[in-house]
Length: 313
Length: 309
Image 1 (cartoon, rainbow over the protein chains, first blue to last red):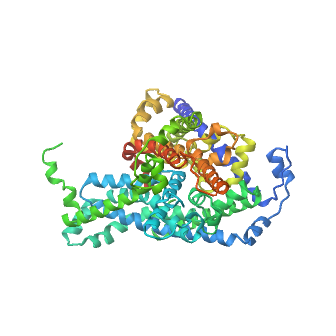
Image 2 (cartoon, helix red, strand yellow):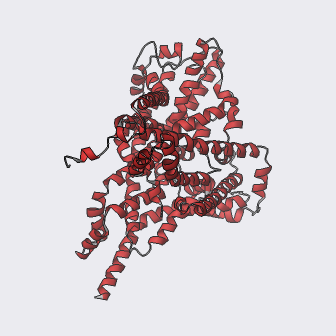
Image 3 (cartoon, rainbow over the protein chains, first blue to last red):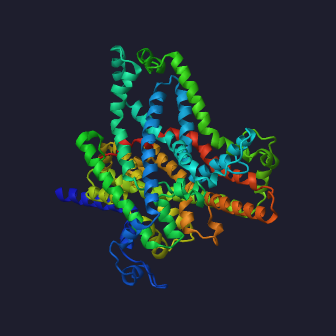
């Protein structure tokens, strides 16, 4: 009897392993195979045409230690790129919590379910448009000749602005675009969290004479903390990462805008595809990765210390 | 439904902290907000049916002088290039989504079984790539030089097939929606895992598989970055719609600039101005069509808190 049972258990394990196999194969080829490529960052990649990649990387390219990183940091562009990446991510992090939480709290109180649903659908739609589409939508406003904004400026007697050549406006434009695209989705996440709060808490608060603001402060916000913390930790993990589409496609890869639009991800792409500078590109993404991963783990550890329920792992 | 349950249940209005007046004011502000939010998309929709002359005179306007379907007609007659792009987008979306689900659902089911011996090991194996990745350079080199995906449909499909998030969402749902006792009973009856998965687990898990499917449909339909990396200009027959749009932005700008430069005056190649907005609308339209239907499922995908642990 025991033999039969353990045989059945073995069979189940084998079958379930077989179930997992296709995904495991995918993860090996698309996630684990590229992992060895981290050593690009520590090599001076000098491929010989005709040799396979592995030979080019391990045999033909000399080790250079941390030289790629020191070059990267000493390059005149890097301070600007790092500043842009950190600047936008900090702004997005703050606005990405405050605005959606505010909207979600308000939306949860709206009387009509149908209207609330309509607001949700409209607000969340931009999140599901690609950056290419977003780029075109913005172009409709900002194009030099046909753009709606210049058209209005002309009517008002002003002169047209060459938006895609004027970097001074773009910090604001990029922030506005990101807020437009991502607010709805975050709002939905917070709204889900709010609607799952036990309504009797609010009932009790109301019977005790709590005002709306007091309810928000003492019930809604504390109970939203785990959700906010989760999103905060995840965002922190991508502190050096940036949305390539927002910074490359939305400004139409315009050269004169680069001082305010170039972020690490744009640099990683350009170093690879435009300058074929494999080692610098790899060094930059390695940096992104290691900083992101450490920040994620540190933030998670700190939050776990403060409030065990709010941490990720 | 019991007849008196309605009396005990408070209406949304009674539960709300807003008085009738506050509700009205806030609602009006929200109407303003959603109008503002939808303006960019509205502009593109309107321009796509504006007449070329109107755009030349007034620019991309919310209130064109006259409407016309010329740009749509022009595209309908423009031959294979665009039809091919739309076909490519549909193909990539359909194949990528289906294949992705076929790979992700079984492993999620395996991970949802508490007595699966390798459960924790595989879970760690799936989480590590969320923390570390090889970076763009090595991903690019592996995909082009080892897997030889460049200039194939596979380059646009395979890299986006799986995601640990989706696997975790699927696993959690399988775990909670299908009672362990039900699976035990099926196993006592001699059911194989494949039968249990196919006959019991998948049918009750429609909401979550639909959610993941729709997220994947949007991701594939919107994808253009893989095309930018892996397709070169000699393989326009593989371009999906989104990438045609990326290219059109570039080529039309250079075209217009060159024309201006050569003739010293504004030159409009007839359809150029409205046609690209028609293409944008073609890329938005499928999303607009399935979106209201999708909204129902959206909340399933948002249970970030439930993914924990």
